[in-house]
Amino acid sequence: MKRPGPLKLKYQDDLNGRRFAFFGKFEHWPAILGDKGPRGHVQSRGARLVKTLQSADYVVFGEGRGAGKKAALAQAEKLKARGRGPQPLDEKQFLQLARPR
Picture 1 (cartoon, rainbow, N blue to C red):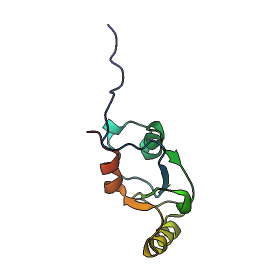
Picture 2 (picture 1 turned 45 degrees about the vertical axis):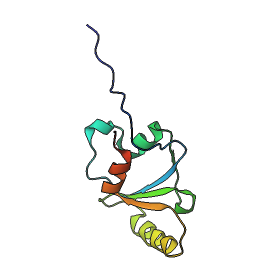
Picture 3 (picture 1 turned 120 degrees about the horizontal axis):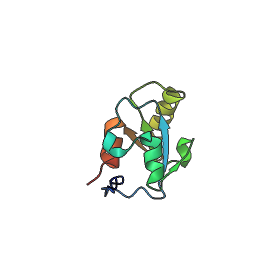
Picture 4 (picture 1 turned 30 degrees about the vertical axis):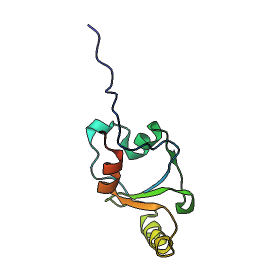
């Protein structure tokens, strides 16, 4: 008997070509989204990972500590005050964006 393959999920939002920067560690990651974690998840959906806020469409801040998180938060706030920069997302907001239909 053949084993069933992985689920082919349909998603709410198209992430293809979007650019994401991640800071901090995720405390929670739903199994339904796969075992690659948030970075692997967005890459599998056609998004790109970037290291700087200026080149990102979204900047995602996990709830846990992580290298550069404090400085990135401050920089994101400055960019937002100027009316430009990436869309900041916390863990919950990112999971809303990443969820299947």
